[in-house]
Amino acid sequence: MFSMFQVITCRAAVAWEAGKPLVIEEIEVAPPKTGEVRIKVVATGICHTDSYTLSGSDPEGVFPVVLGHEGAGIVESVGEGVTKFHPGDTVIPLYIPQCGECKFCKNPKTNLCQKIRGVLPDGTSRFSCKGKSLFHFMGCSTFSEYTVVADISLAKVDPRAPLDRVCLLGCGISTGYGAALNTAKVESGSTCAVFGLGALGLAAIMGCKAAGAARIIGVDINADKFKVAKEFGATDVVNPKDHSKPIEEVLVEMTDGGVDYSFECVGNVGIMRAALEACHKGWGTSVIIGVAAAGQEISTRPFQLVTGRTWKGTAFGGYKSVDSVPKLVGDYMNKKLKVDEFVTDTLPFEKITEGFDLMHAGCTACITLG
Image 1 (cartoon, rainbow, N blue to C red):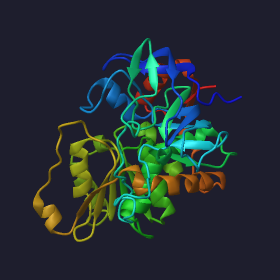
Image 2 (image 1 turned 120 degrees about the vertical axis):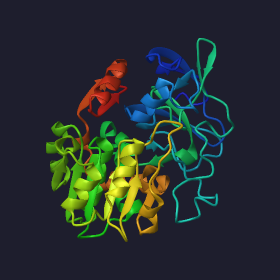
Image 3 (image 1 turned 180 degrees about the vertical axis):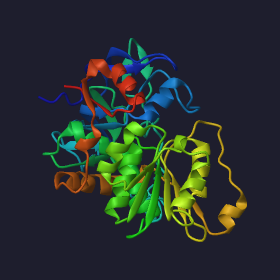
Image 4 (image 1 turned 90 degrees about the vertical axis):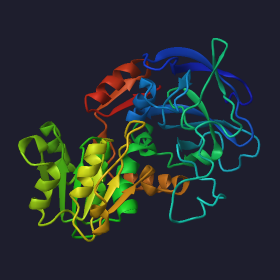
């Protein structure tokens, strides 16, 4: 029985303060207002963005807050004016909305939306705990058994899809995969280099392979990641620690002048420069996927760009979210897209802090809320 228009009491992992561990609390989740949808969250992934905000490094981070933005669940109730979703629908929350009306949504050159706010459309919260209001996070807040999102920040997906897998399409996999296919537009027969072989990097490798790249070079200082990278499609692997030269010089020598496309999947400004300078003069394109710490700036010699290299960035892999996520889920269901292979650990909700530890150790943790 649905609890429409009633406050729901449930568990959530609350970040009370920056730099402090999450605390499992009993919170109240208010009914959805106009244009909003309340969801029973079934599963959520843990992303480095969640950890970055929790650490206090995010200048836009606010507390107390319910983090999480890689989730999947079932619609519990809808607010006034919502026509595209109904109780029982299987959905994935989207940290980049798609209103379909703003100049960004109408422009095929971008997947951004003018209505990106990170909070609910009216600027208020549906969460409270111990008499205090809790902030929403990236418009999703999936570290709760129930959450409320704007209807423009939600995609309806195949109800047969396993939610403890497709939740990862809400961020990391889609971002890396789309960076190769949509942002770089990797061409068949090209040579690519992927810096950082975590989930983002593996997804970028998968995208390069799908685009028909002839050579995909995985770069990481942790050789333990090389076996999996090859399983995802890397043809070569390089550890910068094994070379006395800068890694960009190593790659230029390996590829007769540089790679056609490179992808930075770490969030390190030094590696961003190396990825650009590993590109071939005249046509090489480097895509920044990783998010660097606040206040850091990228740099290179202008000559690198004057001589024909292109430096680009991507958010959510260039995918227009509402339109694309159901298709990505369909590709997964039709075995055209790897997702299961990204999940290294599945934990119950009460072990979410352990999930952060696993993520920092290089694993992909998926939390089921049961």
